[in-house]
Image 1 (cartoon, rainbow over the protein chains, first blue to last red):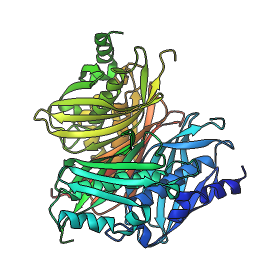
Image 2 (image 1 turned 90 degrees about the horizontal axis):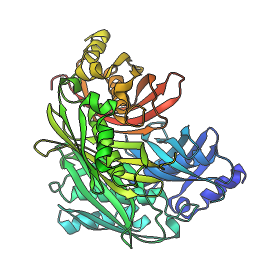
Image 3 (image 1 turned 90 degrees about the vertical axis):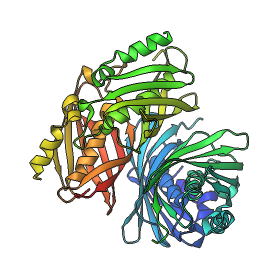
Image 4 (image 1 turned 180 degrees about the horizontal axis):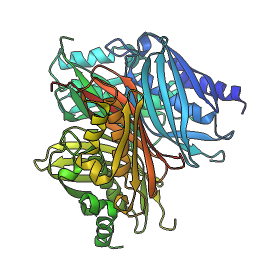
Length: 135
Length: 135
Length: 135
Length: 135
């Protein structure tokens, strides 16, 4: 699968489309995402729900891994931990992911979300299981 | 705010409506949620995206806290950690939350997601900041 | 290895002896530990260092797994998350562990530490890798 | 308190001395620790117990914060999450901490442990509460 095909595959899935989240880049150096926070992402206090931010950080970590492992491999989130350090206000939020440690079966990744001023909104650390092409 | 008003407030917010997630109960014993996983929740492998499951567990923990603290108080997720133990397949998923430790400023909560057979899909532990009514 | 041999093996290892931590029980229902917090466990503020509490909770989760898997299997902590909800003061602290979800390769466990009054000191959620007897 | 007094205070506490862990540096750029893993740190499989590694990473995060906040302030670990990516074998292990996000009441920090070859042994993300000088 080409790099563009990987982006197209994910940008075309139901969740990304429904949420309006897009992966812009996923290669050996990491991943980059964007989402425009609107009314449909807000919880009752008027800021983006934790699920939106968590989905962005989870995806940024996962695609950072897919941009790095051999073609055809998949990965599944075993667990992740997220700190929400500032509210995600309506507007553009950027997601960034990178691999911290790559093992044969398990990969640890870092993900973060930043607003348009570059301010950190959330950061996370996750554990992913590599899924061989044949499985 | 009555117990019903609390549920109505959250069920009416943008994220809950857009995702199709509903809180059924939030009281001193905990919270109960439901969501029907459909195409709009799926990632490229055909199971619910981590953001959906994370949003459900985060919300279940948060509403378990709101169902317990004095009327008018709010809470914000400081951080959470989630284990994804089984894929969330299309169909109904239940979210459950309960308070583990209630401090004056910080509350620790447990949340979990189960499928219709009762199988554990995900579980998590989160730290929340209490927000006084006046702020 | 008998149940007693499992306890003896762990109670005899360098860390348990140096720290003064003991596993009292490890079976299919979970594990139970104890430690007497003294001067050698304290950080500069006069309460037990996070490493002591973390070691207790990690061990409680790990032995809860070893008390449940087939004889000869091992397990390794992939990651863990811990909430410190109250200071661990000098005196007896109890550690408790139990399995939350048992997969073929990965087990999720819960651990907690309580003081002699039963008050929760810390709780945690960890991911462990099963290590087959032959490896 | 001078920078050296801060190091002396912590290096003199019971846990650091009993474990043989030392903070070498704690300033606005982060913290640096060292520990020589020996028999007294090992679990039954012959590598350093998770409590030793967790204590090192927790301390590295905490001292990174103390090296940065105004003199006299303290901090307490609210929670932390750690990934154990390689076994900590007998020999020297280095601990490094740095602040990720500094809020008025809460600080998020990163900590890691590396062996003498520079290989990552563990990494973690923690949430700390700032404790004002007067309290």
